[in-house]
Length: 315
Image 1 (cartoon, rainbow, N blue to C red):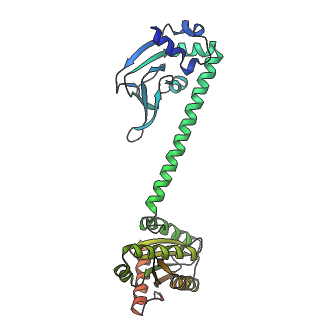
Image 2: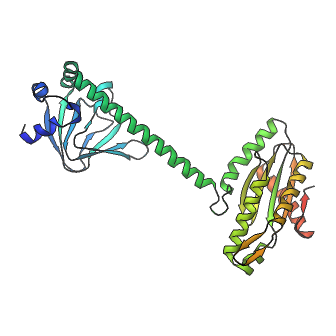
Image 3: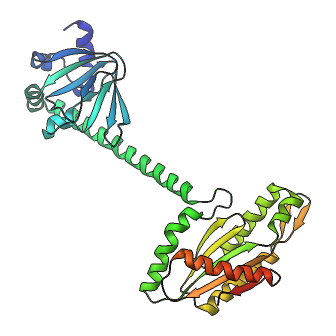
């Protein structure tokens, strides 16, 4: 073992706070190894019988899923293999040299001899494990946060901020089933902004987008907390009113219609109002969402035929 290797071993976290002479004799059976870039040190299908100290270079750690995912990078001064060495199981990750890397591989028996003969080594190893656990926990939290952000983005309409049709296809049927099991009446509404094409043609698509956002926000503000709202497509929205009989559904729909009609849409020197046509299908039994949307759509079509800015019920 050359002097550079010895110095690097002394500065490894495993031996922090120790005199080199107190552990030097225990390392007689340890081996210094050089790893080429991409060379595997540990993998789940091969037993591990060593604790590996990184003297120089770096190791990448990949978690095993359907495809290996990079988890972390270990630098000089750190160690790897301690978990599989302690629990006697196969490694749980793939460890690969990220660059030309030099390691000291300490055999199983020597590791336990070091632990049994030095409380400092034992304490340092516990600290390394605790730090690794803390980092893994943080990684799990960040992964979960990223997953939640992705799910939110995947289920939210980017323009209006309300839920999208993809979310609706999952959430509405669950709510329909729950209402049926609880023997609660419910209603489905399809809402359309009247003459929306004319708004785009007259003021441009940016103002049209503002109208969509204004309508979506006003609907969100005037629905009950347990009602479900989604942008169904274009200028259409779908609403599932839970725990609502026909009279309650008509009252909620009329409130939406009147509040939207009263809401002013402003963009620079442009100011205008929009109106809604709303179709409702009330029911007390579970049905396919597609059928309920179709019925509400027929009522919406009749509302448009009868002059728009009104609420119609499917019969």
